[in-house]
Length: 412
Image 1: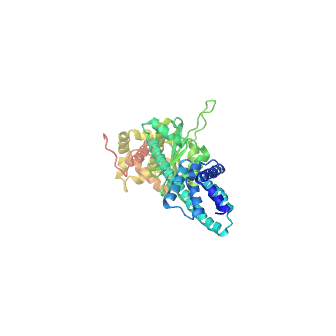
Image 2 (image 1 turned 90 degrees about the vertical axis):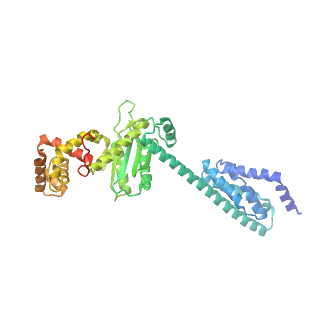
Image 3 (image 1 turned 180 degrees about the vertical axis):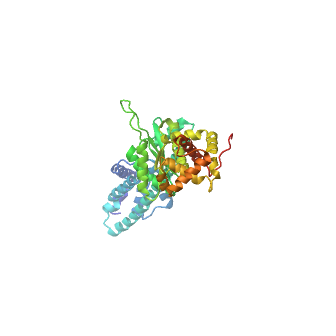
């Protein structure tokens, strides 16, 4: 054995090799920013064997490296940091390999380097795959938790203690006051997830990353934000509802110019149950707007309180619609054309010319229809004394879906 071989033998005895590899690992860990050296596993030993014997890793050994990549993701170590750990350990090891440091055989060094590089490529690729798979699993798991939390928040789950604990990791303080807004695309295009991501960035920029949640539910985009709180003097600042609705509509219109969006903003309510209440108000606002044929882009629950009063006693409003508007069913063409005329007439403040423009009719046709309503019902739409009764009854009819749907029988 020549002097070089003797030096290599002394350097690679089991005890000295273990200490040497530990030193390499610790130096690499420090260079990578304190990444745990345990994530290297037996990687350095695989490199030594590749350089000295030409052996490439077995499938079972690469499987362990994949598990180390998953473990790094679980510990919160980024893919870049763990790869830096491996590469830092690699070049430090190569510089100190006995056969590289002492051998004069360039062909042997070239062969070792080729195997060495292949092991690096196999190990680092497998490590990254393991890390990526673990991240995907975590994202899926977090998305499942998020979806369940959203469902329970909007439903008003009875287990408040559990709800508060589950909301904390998502940055939600359920002791605060919140409001919920819903956005629905009138064409129902299936792009909610992509749109939700873009909308979330705009909402976070406007409201911060605390107590904000953007999700999808039943084809609608759901936005939860903290309500404006009283200032130090105890004076409540302006409501955020108008700002929230306008912001959502502007952002959604920018994202999909060809899709018409309608936004409904619930009122602010405190506590976990307040979120469910605000959500129900926003959802009810969208339903009412659809029944009333509202084209308004942003609707606030406060604007619909009178309509909620109308539908609270459905038997009474059904009786009113039947008594006042029921005779319109006798008209040629049914009740719908006359009801639509009344609706437009009241929406324009009783201006026949504007009503005609909206309905694409002549003014004469409008006045004829109004006259027919007066003769059939006994209520003259042009008479201020009769107008309130007719207007309230028309709203009630739309909320009940009449005449497309039959009125519930009185006494049901």
